[in-house]
Length: 505
Image (cartoon, rainbow, N blue to C red):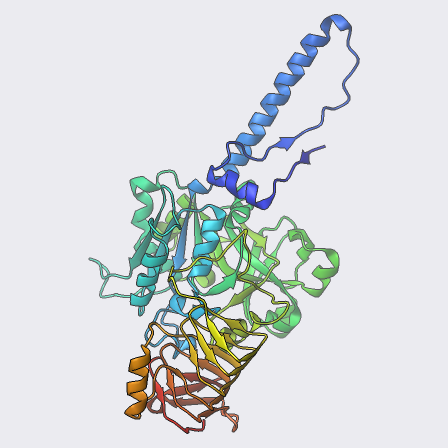
């Protein structure tokens, strides 16, 4: 019989980080001890005590080996051009897109790494990376309280290299890692055993070391984090099929009909309760992987030197010869890849109870320190909404909306089902008065304006008596000259744009 004593999450995390002097250890009860004569009782007890102590020490050493975050390096992929999130990605990288009123998408994997004790992180950037680089340098340096001990956070940008045949961009997820594979030969990577590959545009909370521990205990060369899903959503994902040991044996990209039915698996094999497993007979890849370092380098350099993508090329091909295991993540996860998913995920944060919450004291989400004052709300009605810090709300009504930092909402404004990303700076009262006197529009939302089903990007200037409702139900429209686009029926007011007084959209 093997009895485990589980430490609380915070203690376990502290043990991994080296804050505590001991780790979790297995405690094995002594099996039926036979009766001994008094003359030898002390000797037997001493022997058994020594054996038990040795067993506990060996078990502790085994646990330390499988849960040591210092032997893991995380690589966060900064994403491609983010065309499906346009126009939010017009001037910023996809991981730099604000979410939840005060955060950016990159804060999710970065915070998960911190909370998991992983303090060696590379972030690979490419398109429109200036604001992402700025945010990372401000939020995750060694002087702002979010320390990485003896670790590091390094931003790696796509660069043209000798022999690159003119390629200046990453050609895919695998190519991005391949271009910087030489870093894993560096002296500071000598203790690295496993490489954790993460995306910079997902919303979820996860302890990566649980994933790492499973990967190591099952002696996997590659492990894939997967999500159990039902048949109604299965065709939207890349699915995997596993054998009775949890080894991945086949892949299928967005299958339908008979091909979809063929991808059903027994998800109880991965730990899902039987009742829930019957409702969710499919497993979808989350795009979160762990590779043994030596296997990763061999695949990138020698086995598949021209393959560009992990999910569609390298991993399916490698599964024929390498032990690829599936790891079940049965919790909230959302791919923020489109305007619609971004909009819905933000508004879902304001629901009660919400499927995902930033309010977890034991596993907080970190971001840049801004030192903003509390929001000032005057004679307003706010329902099921998130109001970030540093805002000014005056005699307005806000329903089921997310209001970002430094936002200004004028009197008699009605905001409903709206995601307002806020502003990068304040305008003084004098500046605002001067602009109004000159017939210009200050940052924020002017009085007597009604807005619903809308995303308002940063520093937008929306005038008085404006109506944004998309009453005609337009699904797609590009009207940049007027300061907005419409995507999936959602009006997106552009960053730094001006919506003139009285305009009806």
